Image (cartoon, rainbow, N blue to C red):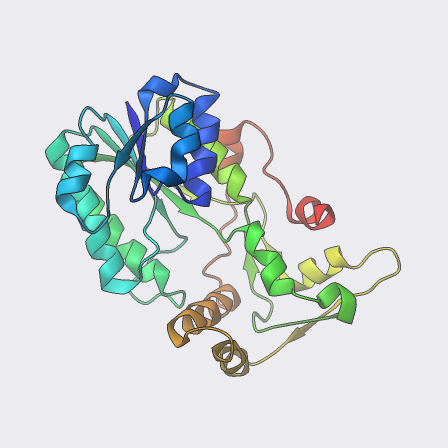
Length: 281
């Protein structure tokens, strides 16, 4: 039996959809805080169980009979997130789960500029220390977030962002979901760590070049990270602004420049490219 925590989120739902095309719904478990959010999967025969990252007892009950578990990282931050992950890992061990999959980030480190990667570093250590068989997907930045970053650049002709010449191996969220479903239903992934992203990396100059077409030119303008964070704070909570500013600085310093063929191999095809994605908008 395969279970997914956080199954009501975008990645969880997409992974479940791919799993439904590969295995019987009776062998799938969606673990969610609010079962109503995945009632459509219950209608398809998926077992929907209530489980909360903050409640280890609920997690333990939800994992009964589960052999393989996909732990989709919590939306919490810092120590709170790591504790929630600890609850899942401990419950999985007690429930007799045989194989734990986890969605991490590139270059997890206690000194990462992209602060969620610090949480992932601590979680990965918990997983390896648990003794559970594991597979870790270090997912690069989603192509899906680029429209938010690009904003009105195609109209104004200017894209302001503080990433310098840094690059990222951007990846489409549904490509990650498909790769997860493939790995969850196949062999050969025991105690493996996969860098999940494109086979190449792209800079923001590459992004503006891709946006420039039909006679329209978009210029990339590198700005100060401090100015970017100051602007973000006008619209976002300070902790969220810090994460986005840290993401930009992480790109600038190479934390996301991790081209890899792992995703291509897991998919059996080329992942969706930056250019293909941007031209689909």
